[in-house]
Length: 485
Ligand code: AMP
Ligand code: MG
Image (cartoon, rainbow, N blue to C red; front, side, top):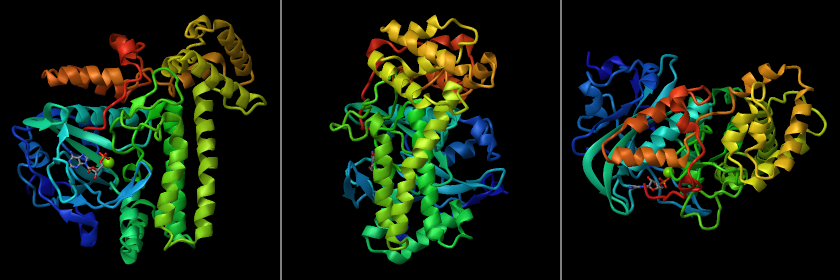
């Protein structure tokens, strides 16, 4: 039996009608070679932990040979980009190679990003550069380490193919995994093309594959939409709690199962700046950090519109009304955990609000602040107060917080030990990604590897790598990232 035949590979998406995709063979890059292989993730799928003895893996993932069990295809979708509908989207440089089952029998897409031209490439070249591939690899694994729903990265390859962006860069490939690559934009494509039978079929498949719990419901399509609302609210609450800005929340970048998807010009907050815009091309701040909850609703409303042939308008409206309530609840729960305040007490909202006000006024590093709070069992409160310029205001708040902590059942060391499990020490600051990219472009991948290890366990201490948890240098703060990738 061949290597690929021995694995549990399926091609269920390819059995959908042809308006859902086009078959496309990958176009290999010159001299593709492994830069990093995610052996931890590989284990879940019975894939080898070490790629070096397995030329089949490089051959298949670089597109040199397509195993007979694969059925590479470019998915068709559409989407609202910066508020305007664009019917002409689809996988312009990525291919769904096949699906693979993990040890528990759950199916995951094997998606190859940077695999060459497709019918949906428009004016693009079908490629991905090393810079953006490293950013996506590191960030998706960082999000997984933080426990935030996300697509995963199984590996990445570099090559000798030059790819032109603002200048020449190195062409690279990323193997992305997710339970599905179906986006809000898949539904929009079928709705706006008036393919209503196919819209129903897609909904049936999404329920069968991803929301089987909806099958027994009176209104399965509505139940599916309620689940999507819930997952989206949960994902965005997680972004807001950790300080993550996605940067391009177009509906074609919204996963139907509520995973963080399509990493482009994202950024983690350094100083707590609610209006932080990480995307250099986002002139209006549509996707600013503090706009994300609102945009989540906008995107869900666009999806609701596309589902209107299947679900009553009044039901859709009621489902959408739940979004803000759910997001608020999830966010409060997450912030309670971050602050170690589990019981609900009068004055808690004001304590939370005043914390955000202080952080924002003082432009205080969000991650360092939250982490410092989780050491108040062993460290003096001055370590927190010293993060602020206005120390009087900070002293007042910290005293209020410590008084409030006394109302908790947990002792302070118990509280702090729980807090250290939810307040990361290591996040993918933009400047860290940038430094790793500069080195990688010189052929030194050591920083990419160190970061991927640190970010897989961001709550743990890594004494030899303290400097990766330091404050960012001035040049590295508030970097705006170009959309070109
Ligand atoms: P993104 O901004 O990466 O979410 O991509 C938006 C659309 O542009 C999608 O249809 C992508 O497949 C397509 N696209 C982005 N970059 C390229 C590229 N270099 N070549 C072809 N298509 C691309
Ligand atoms: Mg995209």
